[in-house]
Figure (cartoon, rainbow, N blue to C red):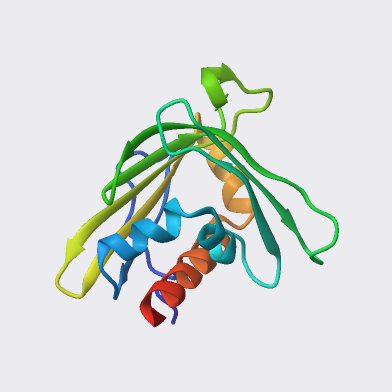
Length: 162
């Protein structure tokens, strides 16, 4: 069984959660989020390819990524706005807004990424907040646990190998 098969239940039933202990320091896990070149290495399930278009880690900053199944044609993945940044602890972004606090055309989730010290490294928690159960269920049908679980495993493999 992989580490993303059994996950804690989020406090709010509209939310989805992936949690894992990553055997690396918080600074390394944070750096994998904060550096666009590193983020692009793990942010989409392989063999798909990610391109980080913008990553402005400040409140109101842009978070835009694209993905490609074949590495040739890229399409939008995340177009969002950074809401909160506490280096090495917390990153919150949403697709309800775009850079500069502008409302988005098609809001979907707010993501809360939390990093905590753990005796074995870092407790990594990624929570996807949805407006209602229908949005949550749609995200489940899109493969939330498999997709977010895979990218969390890719993140762990990257920083644990360093």
